[in-house]
Length: 238
Image 1 (tube, rainbow, N blue to C red):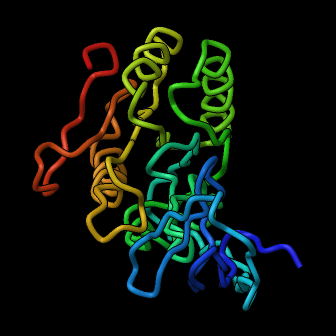
Image 2 (cartoon, one colour):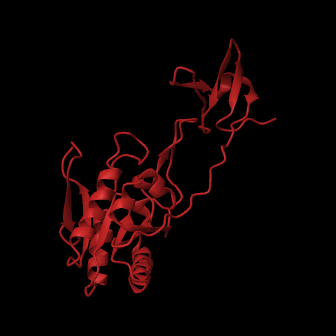
């Protein structure tokens, strides 16, 4: 039976047998994650056989139910486009999975429920360097739909490489906005203990809740390397 990434395998080479977790395929090497946590690359020319020991199990996840709306809180829609903020570490293979389901945002950052009534959905799942003008049109259309549905503010999760371009484009496309639109990114994936994703998201939600008069496109990112405070940066001056 063919081994797949995530399976525990035994690799037989010309002079030894090695056990570990099979990592995604590389061109010239078979890569194993050892029990020590380190990765080992084995030249494919030396490999005689890869034998599965056990197959990776995909745990079933409980269905996440949307929370009941709380009276008196603003309504904020989070539109997801991908990027580091939307990524997770796969601790089985050691790789990074650059996606999560939109409803998982409240499970990852439950503090958002105390700030606003959150609606969270996926618009796209892509690297920000792949953003083009057509994607700005899609985002503008989705923002308009949420405002028409009564959203008090919009948060857009976005990769950091072109975050400033998207913010500038939307600023020019939505001059008579009337509603705050805050783009949020992260330097480290959301499930890492050192991630700045929670600070950036919570700060954006707090800003929208506290500054209902703000009606522009802006960016919310951490101010310093300590990740203790955030700044709101104008979309056309970032």
